[in-house]
Image 1 (cartoon, rainbow, N blue to C red):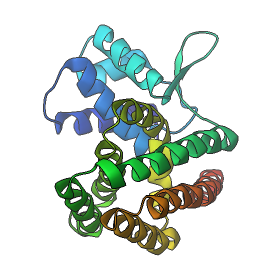
Image 2 (spheres, rainbow, N blue to C red):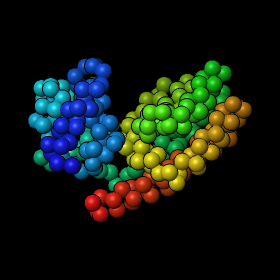
Image 3 (tube, rainbow, N blue to C red):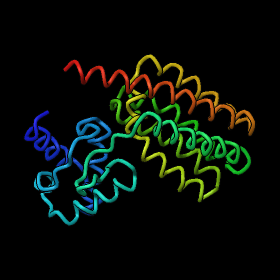
Image 4 (cartoon, rainbow, N blue to C red):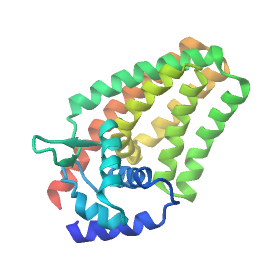
Length: 237
């Protein structure tokens, strides 16, 4: 995509979003553009062009970039110029293993701490994922998927766990979204989600821990495959 094309697309995309603070809105739009691959890994982020696309000054844009840097989505090189982060598969797997341990602990704690209403909400979120995919598209379905995982961590009742999980989740959003688009992995994901829900409903802490840990192990395999497929696609364009 040419510089002019992506700048125009980003401007049009931003205009559809509800207004928030300028920095938060810019961060949201950039995050989603990175998620969708409109700003691919390693691409330089041109602050002047982005500020113009958003209709804002460079001050809130710089703040937005700092937000995304904290989430691991933007890197600054030796020249302090921002680029879209391009973590290696080894780095991603390190994050996934930490995330797997966090979610396994969350599932275990949720079996003890969650209210019946919270578990019912987790079940509803899971059931809504295919509905969102059919009605609203892949991004909406992915957001429901992430909300499902967030709800489990929230139900653990452990604020420190929730905050740490959110940090790693932000770093993994792009690759988890990429993985979620693989049709070959969607049936397996649905089965694993059902196992997680059934363990939570049974208040079986051991089963919940095991199911969530396995789910993140499966994500490692799917993400590696998705990244390889995306690389092949870029090389053949």
